[in-house]
Each structure stands twice: as structure tokens, then as C-alpha cells.
Image (cartoon, rainbow, N blue to C red; front, side):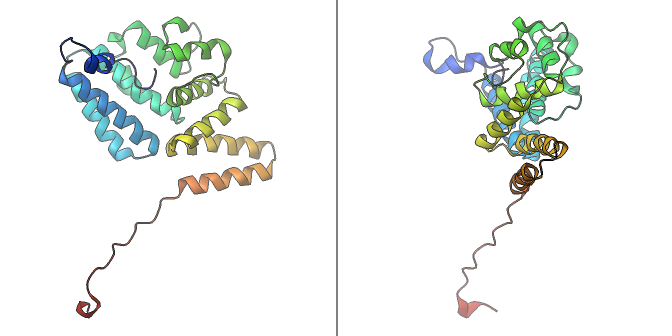
Length: 226
């Protein structure tokens, strides 16, 4: 889904519309889903978990499982963008109440493309199914999701992998960057390209390095120090 799905589409119009302001849960959920995605892609699992729990709670306040299923797909999509192909358990528990478009999107990011109705996918993802590449997807996160879906379906090529690496790198998204660099490294090693493998490993080492904490400045006057 484009960036963060269409759950809160009305929020974008609230400031320039004479219609009633959307319920608070919509804006709260939208903001928390944004914060979740940013934190997750940066590799901050603690913040990501807290923000998603907050977003899910806001959406769940409606008592609508179809909307909660849609929110769960946001989390699943971020995981697929980072090549985390574990089961999408949060969505699976609500799948029976999901709308057809959400079911098709779940199949798409799950790599289950046989019989997929691409017309029900978000607009940016429809051409991916027919073209077999994520290169034309404009939104950075959607491009990574598309590349992950292609990988899961066994259809990703070198161009998609390179595009995913450079997209994650340009955005400063550590989690997907390390995952996609890992794919590149395995391919370089399999091809016996030691030079490329060494260069990729240097990028992995750099991106995976956690900066050391900065020691606080001791502002105690020298005469008072013991």
C-alpha cells in the first residue's frame, strides 16, 4: 500500500475542508503508523513496537476488524521490505473480516501470486505484477515492499536488489539496507567475485556499527574535582 495505506485518507483533507474534523482516532493512528514505519526501518525495534501498539489500539477502538487488519498489513509490509518473511500473524487472525483489496495485498506481499487480482492492489503495485520489476515504483517504501514481494515470490532480479539497496541507503533505513546488502553479498560470493564481496562487506560493517555513546562533558571546575 502506498506509504501507509488508505486508513486515514480523510486526514489529509481535514485542514482544507469545511466538513467536520475526522475523529481523533484517525489522526492518532495515522501518526503512530508513520512513527512505527520510520522507527522499524531505522532499526529501532523498541520504539517501533510501542508506536504500532498505540496505532493498533486507536484503530481497534472502532471495533472494526477490517480496519485493524489493514493496520496489521502496514506492519507486515514493513517487514517484507526488510526481507523478514515470517508469518503475518496479526493479519492472519483478522483475515476472515478483511476486505477483498486487503486480501489481495496480503497475498501479494506474501509471495502468493498465482491467481492474484492485481487490479485490487494499490496503484503503485499493480504494474509490478505484470512487469516483474519494482524499478518503476516511485515511493521509496512502496519500492522496497515491491522488491520484497518479488523476492518472496522468487521473481526478484539483480536490478530489483540493487534498487532496494540504494533506496534503503538513500533513506537511511538501516534494517532493510542490511538485509538487502546481505542478499548482494551472498550473490557476489556465489559468483566468486571477491572484490565485490569485500566492498559489500565493508558497507555492511559500516551500516551495522552502533555508534559509541558520547561521554558527558565534565563541567566541574578543576579545583573542585577530586
